[in-house]
Length: 225
Image 1 (tube, one colour):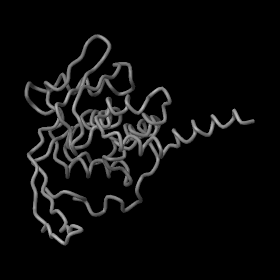
Image 2: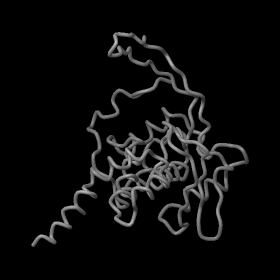
Image 3: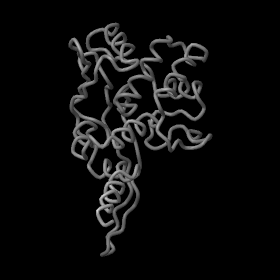
């Protein structure tokens, strides 16, 4: 598997720059019955949509991968020392397993010790009352011990999402969750870092993108009037 864009036509219909709403997710759910699902069941695909939407996990953190390979760029230091390019490999990533998920009477828990791209692992907790969470719970109950919740390869997942909507790709959901977390003024930067596992610089980028910090500073200017 090659790092970067394994699907050169990912943005053929444009890059999504707006977070999707629950209403749009509902539309996606309704389309699942009518599309080519590449041999996967309706509720399997719907559960995959649900976990992508609510958790914000990267694709490999959910479905796993066999390891990534990429080529670094040649670098020249200020003193003229050249560091040649090289091919690097990452270890295979198992994805979300049965034991990574558990529930109590009111919540479902997702735990990963580590995440991709040096993000910190941890436990994400969601109320069972959230829309479509029941699909994930159902999928979890059907999964055998030590097996993946979503045994699907990247190509099939990619094609199914494109069959749902030509503009849809996995990162749309990662982008959506980070955007929604950043828009909620009850969530501090530290809160979002802890929940998402992402670097503070990444979280700050999302918060700036939605105008969160600038809006608060602008509001305080009202004291001048």
